[in-house]
Image: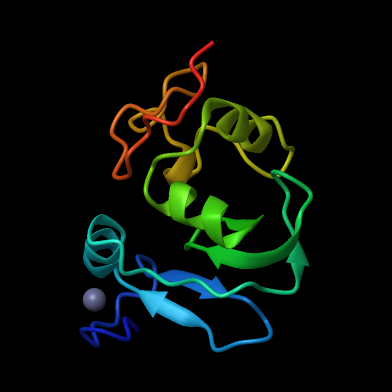
Length: 127
Ligand SMILES: [Zn+2]
C-alpha cells in the first residue's frame, strides 16, 4: 500500500527495503513524483549491489523483480535513468532481462541508452 496516498494496488507498488531501516512503499505515481521532485530519500542498506558490488545496497522490488542496488543506483533504476554500463550489467544478469518492467525497451535502447530518463543524464559517459 502506497504510504503517501494509501492506495492498495499490490502488483503496482514499488518497495524499497534497506533491511536496517523501515521499508518504503510507493505507487507508481508517487514514485515518479518523488523522483522528479528529488524528494526520494533512500537510506543506505545492508546488502551488496548487484551492479557495482558496493555495500550499502537496498532491496528494490516491484511485482516481478528484485534488485539489490545502492541508494544512488536505486534512484536511477526507478527513474529510468541508469547509465548504459549499469543497464547492461543488469540485463546480462541471469535474474533479469529486457522483459523486466524497469529494464523494458520502452525505457532503454539495446545498448543501454536511457530513452525517457526522469533524471538528468548529462553526466552519462557516451563514449
Ligand atoms: Zn501513492
